[in-house]
Image (cartoon, rainbow, N blue to C red; front, side, top):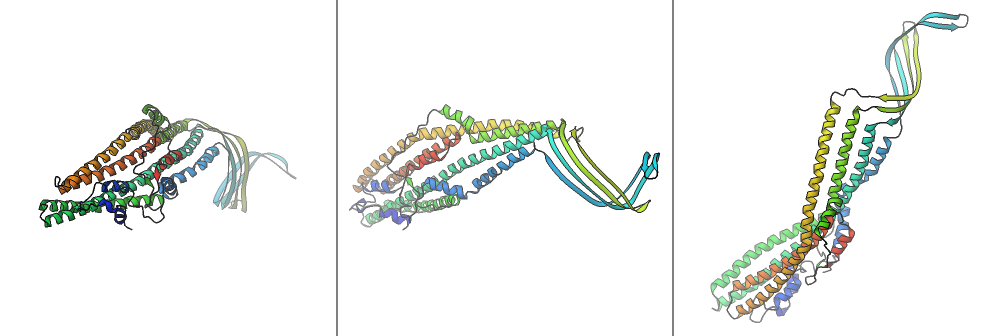
Length: 484
């Protein structure tokens, strides 16, 4: 059944007066009960609430999936930080074509039958042959400010990924709620257009009949027709808006956007202890996910300054190395000349950088400037969070005042429509007056519903600004929704 068909099915026959009036005094009261639930009432088995929508969004939203993947890299960064303080072992080998000449003088020679001879000269010459070599090196860092800063940066990167995941989850929760209420609001707007169209069509028929009988002027008929044509255009735009809202919701959650649980028209919003604004501002300044992320970025920037400053500091390592080299080939003293050496060493290695071509100082200056930027970014984040906190707190507190005002506006619009309907029946009011009264009632009903959505979103936004948006806050908002 179409949305329009469902809307009409909810209007009882008593809503139409015997005289053919567009809307009887009782009709708008029935429309009020049906206006916000007409579109999705006939959805086949669909029953999606805010918690189900958020669960679906966690499964399919690409931005949240990217944050999860980055957080999964956190443990690996932690292992990298630990590895910078542990020993490293490397093995290398080489083979190639080489040449060598070695000589020594004043050596002592001892051989069977020769005795011992002093002042002996030796020469080995390989003009070309196969060169091979191998090395095994173990190094244990003992002192390195640069490694210490790099390790701390890796630890901060892991912490930042976890903080980013918490932020992404809260952002997704808020985005899901917005998309959810966007669908409900678009449904309300379409329902309003459909009921206005239906009422205007009846008014047009009455005006035409009255004109044909000579009871009403032609202006009544023309005004009803003009209003009907304008509503047809607005209804088409409302359908497009609803289609886009439903498409966005489905893309975000992977769930159908029909049959969403909604606010009961006559139920008041549940109480919410907003507390004092200064308390929320203090929470936001300290616990906001954005401020936490910027603080970690600042700490990482400070470690970058330390790292490049440490480039001029000495490093101390414990070194153990074993190596061997061999060169075999033709030489001046035979066709099988061989030069072979083996060595091993264990000791302490001290390295002091002297000149890097200006790279160290340039990188250090860059790191200092970026650290200063990170400090200002924290202040900007705090200001932004404070502004959002104020807006959300006002929306959650004064929004209830607006809800009450819109509720009274609906009651007033209903009273006005009742009076206008009676005046129209006795000829004291024109068809245009009646249509305007109907439009005011439908608009007030939609604005009441919109005000409720804004209050609920403000509650979530307030918790989000303070870093407290979680399953409990979402469940509290979800508890206000009912099956349709």
